[in-house]
Image (cartoon, rainbow, N blue to C red; front, top):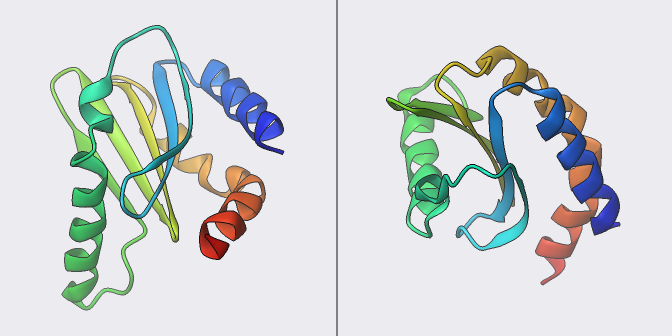
Length: 124
C-alpha cells in the first residue's frame, strides 16, 4: 500500500506547479513517507519544525474558533502548508509563488490514502 501512496503523492507533486515536497509524519515529527523534487528544502522538515506545528495547532485551537486544521507559513523563498490529520501531519513545501489554494484543495483528495497509515500509527 505504501508504494501506491508514494506513487499517488508523486503524481500530485508533478501536477502542482512549484510544489517541492510532500511529507507525512506522525504527531512527533517522525517521517513516515516523503516525496520530493530535486530542490533541497530540508529546513522545513527538520525534526523540530513538525512538532512546533503541533504546538501551534494546539495553541490556535484555544482561540475559541474551533479546532485548528491547517497552518500556512510564508517565507521569502518558500511556503509551508501543514495539515493536521491526527495522528498524522501532512506537510507541503512549495515555492513562494506556488498556488496555495491548489495545495489546500488537495486535502480531501489525499484523505482516503491516509487511512492505512493512520491505522498503522494508531496501532503502533
